Length: 175
Image (tube, rainbow, N blue to C red; front, side, top):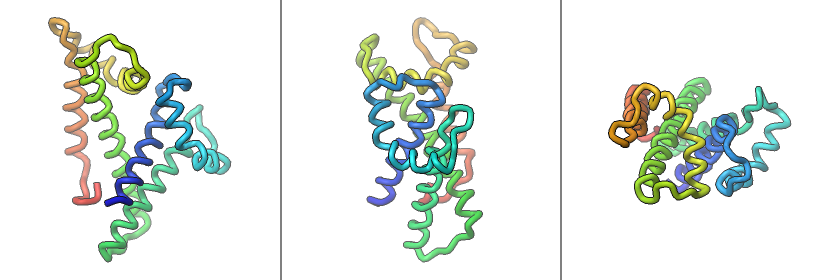
């Protein structure tokens, strides 16, 4: 449990690093700085071998994939199971996709709750959440504008993410 939790949290921070770069979030935001500081050392070592591609930090994604694969391998080894390397890679990619969807789901949920509790009150966390979620929410808002001042785009996106999570093939106890 402890190994799964620690590796899972670190993988989420690595995914957040990649997402923050993709959406061009404010690098000087305290939350962005935290993500950068926590992930910089291992990712910078991998960047020597895995260069950036179109300003995307692929080393962070590769490191996240390796950690997820290592985590799955540990879980399976403790259960006394062996797995082919290609299958482990496929399961690792699947788990990384699941973690990414869960990250988006909870970031949208937190952003929605923050908008109810303290609307219009800027904070470092709300700025990062807006940067992450707005590229996904904006197209939905273009199709479904706010109704009587109520923005339903987070609800629509959360339902879509849950549908995607249910459509992904699962590995009970592992994903």
